[in-house]
Image 1 (cartoon, rainbow, N blue to C red):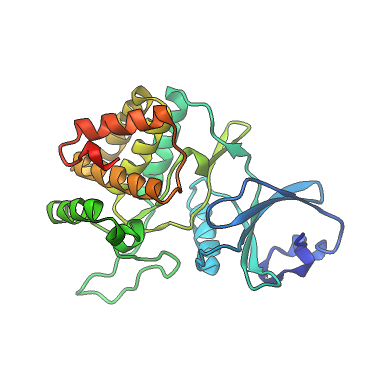
Image 2 (cartoon, helix red, strand yellow):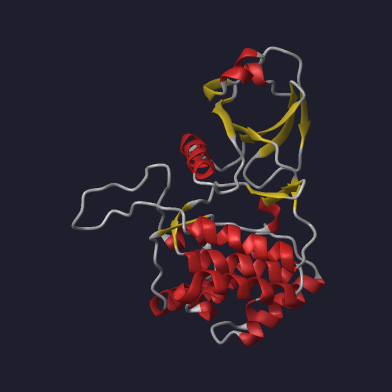
Length: 290
């Protein structure tokens, strides 16, 4: 099992560096699609070590800087303590331990989650305009929307056709900061404090899509009533900026179906029933895609 002392640290908190050779425990946590995750017990403190040893190869230097910037701006994210590479050249990131994923929802919790997502979208970023020379913050990446969120869509012509038709109808804006995968698995709770984790998908993007994806996941994995309440809270916070909701709901639905075909999302009969109900109500969707 990996040890902290075997990592080539590029940046590391000095207090941790001084005690890195002392005895510590590494406890595996539930792995993600992109990385293995360990809980670290050191100096009676808890940390999380994430190891990108799978196909994903994000720029962890930028993610480390992003976490630092977000925490400085007051957004509830894990505190970054260090980053580097292991003996196999896999990137690693050491952060604070902030609890376990949210499993219980009520209106009060949903209201707090909506406020946090809105805070993320309001995070100040510099967008380079044609007449100006300022560069974007280099720790926030910019991607082509379809290439990033629908990477395998060309293999699925039925979905491919609808996605490209929607992109002609909707003008996607990529001028705000978004999380990219704001769901309950990426929101931790400990002692009443909620922390947003997994910023691999953080990027310049469209908050309407970010909100639609989040609402969609809460709706299909919980209850429609909770999803509707959460959506109403987001609308109240964002004002008129969350327009074209049906179009972005359709994009979220299509992305989930694409991931489902690849076997990357949990599903059961109740989830599928809720997914089907969304397709029936949305004019851009076809239920036979399921």
